[in-house]
Length: 494
Image (spheres, helix red, strand yellow):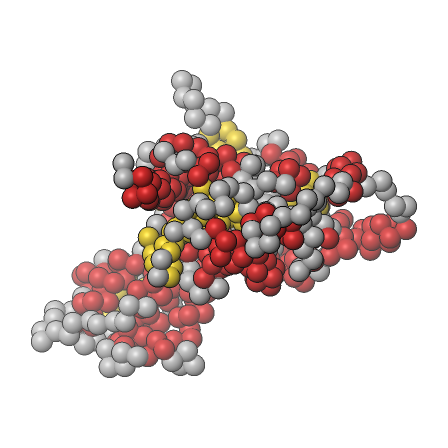
């Protein structure tokens, strides 16, 4: 019996090095005893030698071969806290040498074991990203960076696996995340991960109050489902969540709150409702337009009822720009400001687009700008109208107008901004990531360029990533500007 002692802190390399030597020597799984050093140290008679000291000498060695899917599975499973994980991994590795398609057999008991471990680790990682609560610490003297500390209790050895997520998301502050299974820290330059267990210092600060206020305000007693809530927010995490102390009381009072809500008198609608109704009552003077023109189509769209979105929107927001533009920009749908003004791309996303165009020399006055969906879809939250993504049924209903615009304007280049615009132009056949930034032939005399929607750039919380995506967006718009200049030279000869 070979005894292999490993640290067992979620590091795949130590298991892989040992497993490679064992496979090379054709050692069967039942001939190996895998031990974790921390557990073995409590055994008076255990041999604490390193893994290498027990490895066999390889003669006529096998070369371990595994399918590509095995490595990510092993990287996750080795983080599991089950002490049998190394044996299970090696058992599967050993079988893969003779059964290379084994991973595809999900019903196999050994395969199912590893996938169950991978799922548990993945879920633990997700919970860590959701339930870490930072507490602000006093800044170091002379430093302008803010410092934060967080305590979390994972089920598995996932600190090193999840730490890069927090580095990307909170790169502009110093932080430490301590757990019983290791610690991760970031100082703006170096991400350090330690396997040493830490202790909970039980720190509290003012953000605990903010968490409770936030949680109390998003709680809707009419939609309470206790089992579902405990699935998404298991009780084992509650002791480290400042807002969790509200949960028992909120559950107990939910029924009474729902009854009170039902019996309460109707309230006045928010002020902006009156503004919307006033705008809707204004019947614009409509002059007869030449048939088969863009202006006639615009008038027809003003009374569009092809889908339910017209019921809540203030008005149809039709495209605008030269009727013979060489370039048509297609966005997703009008936003709050566009809905009130009746013009596309004048809100925050429109300003991002304008700035990109200004930097790369795109003349917006020569571009036709429109949206895949012509009515604003939103959800009321208090007095705010929060944008909601249109579904494919709504996109397909509104595509009728977009196709008429394409037929009348006849652009040489269509720029699809975002997944909704791409779905409208390509009937949902392609993914944005696969086409982004490429100048593609849409048909015999029309090109297509796919890029992100500018509102996407506004929602990226990480500063560094937002800059990267903004640069990439500017690169896409630069291609549009180059196309505009090329067509202009072809037309004018200059």
